[in-house]
Amino acid sequence: MSKSDLNRIQRLLKSGLSKAESPAQYMRELKRLVRDEVHKGAIERQSKILKALSNPERLKIMKLLSARKVCVCEIMAALGLSQTTTSYHLRVLRSAGLVKGEKRGKWVFYTISSPDAMRLLEKVA
Image (tube, rainbow, N blue to C red; front, side, top):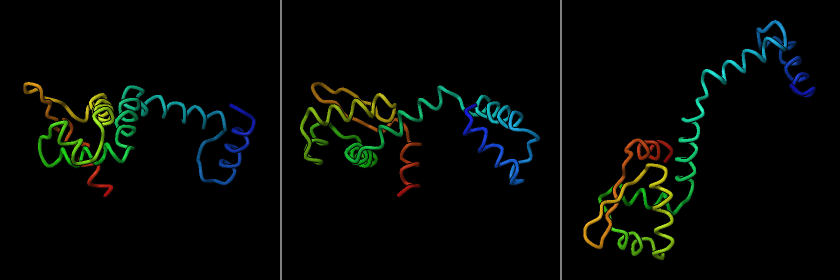
């Protein structure tokens, strides 16, 4: 623990806003909380999903896919994107587990694979 962290913890304890008996005890409690509540794998998955959803074009793709299955060429035409850009955005969304593609001959149709992601988006709208 750095000296500035220790000073902050001591000020917090003196304020009475925390009931820990000592800065060392408080830090042990915080470390236990992180160990028990912050699961590295889940955090990494959540971070990947949020990163995938942080781009406006990918959000538009998700909204488009929420209406129905859509072919890559339809996404390109609807959003005015190049094939390369569309493929990149779809790859990011697939990698995050948000969409899946179904090949039909030369065409690939995409759907949302995680309805939970759309519920999340609807809550922040």
